[in-house]
Image (cartoon, rainbow, N blue to C red; front, side, top):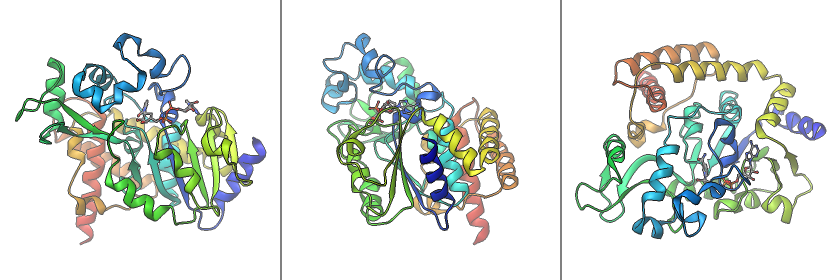
Length: 343
Ligand code: CNA
């Protein structure tokens, strides 16, 4: 593994390096969120209490239409705001700071890439997120503050037609967001220095085929506890397979890159920001498209510290309780302000 890590470090340190990520639930297990398929700890082996006919039913749209309780039991557990990003999430952010991040395709719905400060332009949430909630029948949107309030009293229903509502998480039987198809159409034709595939069993389609479709001029890297999919079935000579805990792998990699202190700084600053008071709702992070385009994220820790202070100001001028959602909006507001200032 050490030789492979050295090879990877050399690639990343090379001129004009471009890194793309394909990640799944395994990058969030160290945050305390169980993945699907890990034996014993995975959600699928702990769903008996929900009385499901089959484990995937919890995210199956047809099952949800008849019995939404199983999903809502999980939703309360997984709603963003309860968990802090892992080292791996911050490594993605560090790639952004180093200007080598080109895209991060994630299957996760925990929004921890955003919480770690990765900008929305780089993230493709292939399986959706909790950011918006819609009625499954009439399509009326419900704001997530109302949704969260209703969830405390039982299964939330559409205030217009009375049907069930659900967040825009992609269930089995639903199509992926347009952003996924639009950006993949572009990215699949591009050459990257490395494609890092991490924390995923690559069993859910169409996401599972992305590493197989990546250009042959891109070096593929697998950071996972087990070998999977194309890395096993159709390995490429240039593949770098690193079977271990992905946070351990990242720790070694940043040491080789000489980025240890940069990563620690991001983690500590992130923690401070997350622990600062204030709140906003997750839906507030979905701002107008033009506004979203913004954002060159500051490259130095000095700039980041300034940003933290500004975020605290934005947050404390807002609402009440303590949540990671606040943080996300705090950062985005600042970025918008920055853009406006440049006009
Ligand atoms: P999965 O099928 O559960 O696979 C997870 C993979 O990660 C397995 O191969 C594990 O061996 C591996 N793994 C677990 N922990 C680590 C670790 N610390 N280091 C390295 N490898 C590790 O999950 P996938 O993401 O492949 O499946 C896609 C589903 C999972 C998507 O639809 C998600 O929405 C869904 N999901 C998301 C979350 C989340 O948002 N955090 C949690 C659970 C499930």
